[in-house]
Image 1 (spheres, helix red, strand yellow):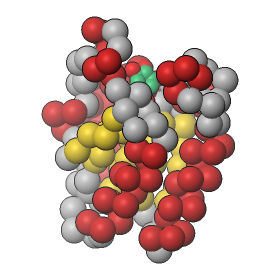
Image 2 (image 1 turned 60 degrees about the vertical axis):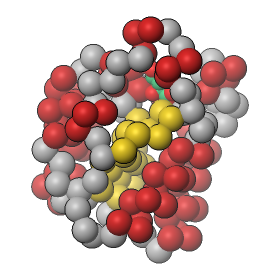
Image 3 (image 1 turned 135 degrees about the vertical axis):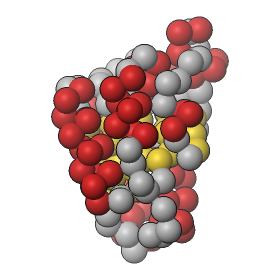
Image 4 (image 1 turned 90 degrees about the vertical axis):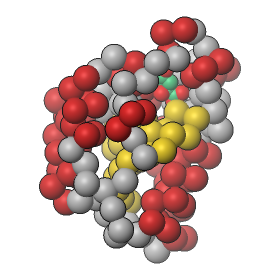
Length: 144
Ligand code: DQA
């Protein structure tokens, strides 16, 4: 199983600041991930939450399973040490995904507390970043 986990406000994609995040909805992100996974012959679970404790629970489960994770931590990226600590427990690969290029945006978005514990980071490519993350994680396979 590969987990695609999304943090706060990403459930509102499509209507949320479309000039930054595009007009594709969160449902489109789920559909893209599921279509990509089917093509690659891997199982994917795509989830979104606005609640920190829920995200931490999902990361613990992924850690226990040794599963790979593509994570868009959204605003948590920039300050949430509890999410980072949960990411540090993962035994599978972790790809940090951002729809926008955070380095073209406000200074407070330039810092990620997650990147140091991620294997790779994909940003600025819109929702295609999720497809690219899945392509990578699928070809890594079970080798963590
Ligand atoms: C984001 C970038 C973050 O700075 C922001 O808080 C988000 C989305 C992105 O996908 O571009 O919610 O992670």
